[in-house]
Image 1 (cartoon, rainbow, N blue to C red):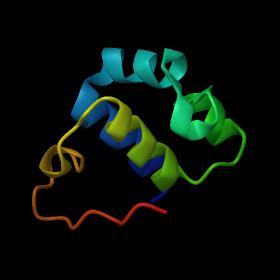
Image 2 (cartoon, one colour):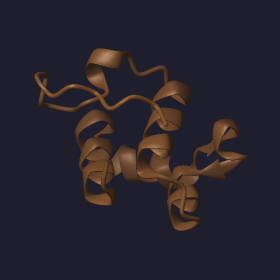
Image 3 (cartoon, rainbow, N blue to C red):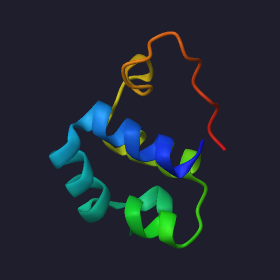
Image 4 (cartoon, rainbow, N blue to C red):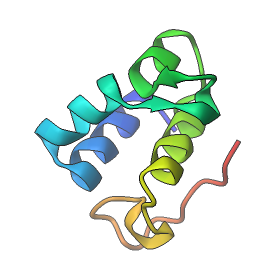
Amino acid sequence: MRYREFWRLVDEVFGETYGRTLAADQVLGALENRTAARALEDGVEPRTVWHALCDAMDVPEPRRWGLDRERPAPPPA
């Protein structure tokens, strides 16, 4: 997963405004108590960050991949 794909999914799954706020403000234990945005800045793989964010927000597997329902989900890192 690339950074641009991560942000596209944030926008699609959570909505542009809420998703960006969530990524900037929600502290995630799975990311060593960092926000998604901070973890990305620190070099954590976007796929790892995406799964941590989805897990924390209880996003069901079928919804994790945005509008493209046919695309297979990459496995967690």
